[in-house]
Length: 355
Image 1 (tube, rainbow, N blue to C red):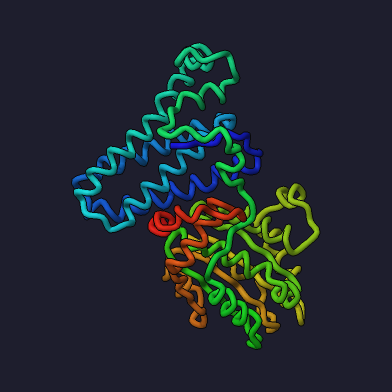
Image 2: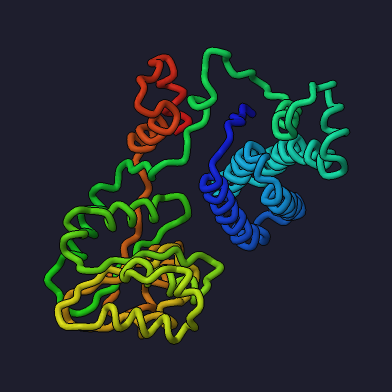
């Protein structure tokens, strides 16, 4: 477990917490789906979920321990991979205890910190009196020590713009649909399992130069499992108007919805609205705020549930996002690990297997 303990920005910490929450949501769904098939290990799965949830709550209160948040997120990714790999039960009985060992490596020093944030942590291995985050970092004994010649920045990619690899065909086809000549309001739904790149694809389309020029107004909002109507309405309004969030937060939902309708209503106004990561039918709750003005406006959903897109409209176009090809996975892995630097050719064979 090789961790980078570079100080993250507050924005990066928020993003990390958001991603961790998404992982826990996915894991909760898998628990429900897998319990009937994996009765022999359901208690282990439940325990792992509870441990990760507990760690998430603790780490949110201690932003100085962002390195632990990254490590814990990696474990959540690993659990999701194990449960979605269609592995036999005997394989789960081997891997899940290994996961618990990794969780314990993180949980035990955090428990010491919780009991005494200075004395007990500092006493571990007789560490020098450094700040709490550095002392905690040293308590995690990495199986492999990072090379002293490699900077911390090189070890862990910073959170920047989304990396888009493959799916150019999907992006082009959906863009052409959005730019089509149909005057009626049209709903396009992109659905697929978590991690395929639905949000990244939607963002790429949203920022496409042709899309920006074609639509008079554009707005995008992450809906997620914890749908909050007022926050969604405020997010839409801040995109399509000059109103400030502080001002909008004082208004009720009906007033916010009315302002959205007024901003989009009018002959010739063509708008694009993206509702990202829809978990349930929210369109029936929001559709009245988006006028049908016969000007070629479009609504784009991203969701992990096919039926959500199908139920929104009889004329809805539903797109099932494909998996990346083996070559595309390898390209994506190279970018994430090596960025724009050349990679050692001797790592290509093992790298392609990992991809």
